[in-house]
Image 1 (cartoon, one colour):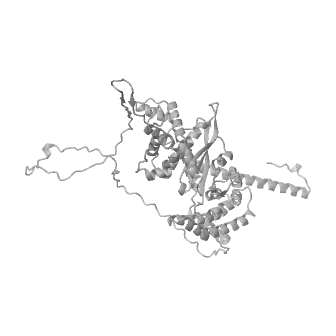
Image 2: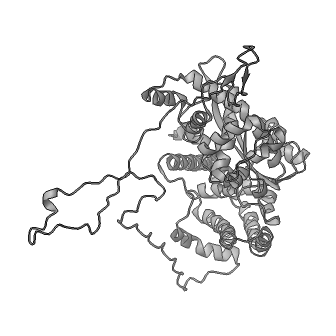
Image 3: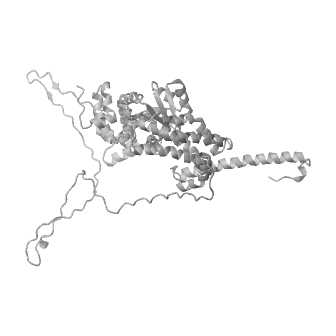
Length: 516
């Protein structure tokens, strides 16, 4: 901007006022530039950088004096040498030796006989004897096979009367009068919801195997299976609501609108129970209004660990539910402020690092919930007290809309909930468990792109509940779903808890007796 000297006033007071306004404008521009630079750095890191929020230990050295002064109230000694930060030990490289293939794989033996002319010793003409063999292993693959299972029911009739025909009752099937067996249905569900394979690709795979199964038929099968499994999910939800603590998070799911040309944003919510009620249940809602989680959690009494979504506020205010916030979310704000205020950001990250050190020690020692709570009271509470004092001091000298100011404001707003994890050893320091659980949806929507309708979102929630719980317990979802689809139609509602993945894993060697 160019100023024309002729239009400037000659009054010194007026000139001072102009300079003051110009300096104010420059300050506003500097703040805006810093904000945009911070956003640009975050976008570049999201697009091209690593997603981990780990801090290089060497970077913490630059904030060491500030940490000493602000945390321990000790003046830094400039003449004292800085402590050396140990460099991370180099990762041990794997050797080049090949591992033996798994012993439990079936093996096909092919022998290559020595020619008869080489079985006679050329020196003494004696016949050679076998002294051993050399075995070379080769891992091979056979495409998946399909077969037709015939359910044969002989019919009997009286030869004299030529009447009174007797025939056995037909076996229960996952889809009445349908052609797919439980193994094929389990394969379709696992392929889409565990392996993220859209049904149109699965249709092409079947075609290569000589089967003409249309995508619309596969979609109907998925819907029928979801309806069949829904009572099991309801029982899992009842069990989950008995947990001491529930982790929850949500992610968007594009849903095809009624015009079939545009998509809108639906939501999938993941709810994870505690170890005594170790079920994962997904819920679908067409929007992100507070009614979704409030209806799902109706009757729950305990701790809810979640992010700072405002929709949870009504649950904490109206229900007997206590909020537990996530230190990973709080840490992310300070991590993103490194570019604009590295000293303060690293001081805050140093405090949070101390809190996570306590959690790491508790995990390494496999402490009980009671011992973990005692350790947190002894080690974590003093760190939280120092951290709060430092936040109070820094809030007086930082710009509220700067990245570090926003990080401090977020910590203040969530402070009580951020401290609550120290009260109970069943609670976690962060909500990363829920975020990891939602990765299956994030990967899936990059492949199947969108749900066809709200009903499709509900079906996805049912299948994701079982697939994610299987993964949580180290269960092969195909084996589980094949067995459950075989049994579920013969079990009364009172026995559905026998099909919870955790219970199924414990009893899989013991066949569940027939309900009859």
